[in-house]
Length: 422
Image (cartoon, rainbow, N blue to C red; front, top):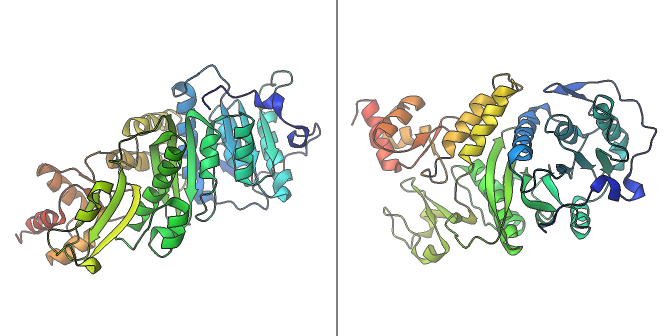
């Protein structure tokens, strides 16, 4: 699997090669970061542009200095490409040498081909006989499995799926180069909020119940599912970043495939929340018989919610995010807002990457309700907790919430002190 990928542009079978005569590009209706395209009849959300921005930044950095063989062609595969905007941006902005754009709907072929043709019309001529992109219309899992069987491996695989079906994850990992990046998606908010426990169990191997921070649970559910699939194949994964967007809602996670099994299970386990005192904790597999909360009797099952197994480690790689922020600033993307300001988003993610921070967050209104006070300013509470020696920050996943390793009882004391009611 670690072998170098074959030269895909030369090995494509005839049905997937684009014809010489391509339709003229349709009139431009949309633009993202200077890349023009027409979504046609495909499902397209401009609100999702930030997720595509993050993917392009990460892919660019990976192409520059994250690969085991920097001299090899940089290959990307968009398994559910829609109108082809992600594939087009990987070509035009991330510097991909070749992009495979796939969508199950053959009706979208004219739209995808026309949009990718925009890149070819505005780029230097390719080497003789060397294609820069190809379009196909297969089931994503089948396409990825075929690439693996043909020993065609990719540096970046992007699967922008709908719902919570994660059947493609194993095939995607198999078609990925060692060290490559896999960009996963889930829109299954019901499972993340504990309303579809059977679905989360079958798709991600995690039993999820309602928790006060469901959107973070959703991200950890997706990462945990990928970690489980990688372990089954003899690999392990490392989260690069995790992004939650309210529209949809959408859970997007980029992970890096690493060679060899990781026997350390400290980042894969269970999260608990006590309804009595509001405290959350993590437990490993070897602690399953010891799940309890100091404020309750361990036999009172109704007061303690347990979810898992899922990812309990950091959601992001702080050093990689710092490089992404620097690149966004270099490209002029950091402070120009297309629905989301990347500087603010990435800076918050970097703070969230602190390994001292446990899973979950605490809502400000929960602190004020338990303290029986008006909510203190979020920034003031964060600074006060830091002065007490705790790690604390905002969360990009929720507004008016705080991520901290401070016990909720101490948060209540600090909040009262801020209001001079201690």
